[in-house]
Length: 149
Image (cartoon, rainbow, N blue to C red; front, side, top):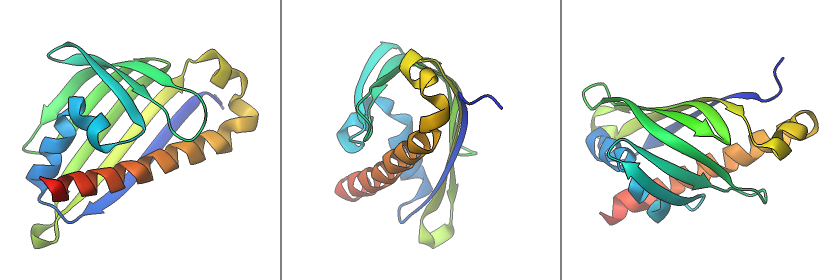
């Protein structure tokens, strides 16, 4: 087992139209406005940027995010990551009729940050809990953001 390889999945049910959720998720420049753990987004060009995140643990992760698949019809947003974490992140937004939508987040990454690699075995459960806390905060932040617009 590669202790520096992670697969994460999160499912959010939101009381908002799928199109509005997709539109919010495709505007990565706005993530710091509603997702507290997304500390900074610096655009490099129209399809890439540098993102810095920090959740409960006292470390930042900085990665270059490059747009991959972007398909409004199927609700898929995909991006490649390189830097402190390398891999793939994907949002899939599916309408639930009058009840809102289901947001499925998938991430498969390899950790490259030296300290995190060193702590891979003993801290793995803590890293996973840290990610889960970040995703819960993201759901709350997106919900509030969508209600405000």
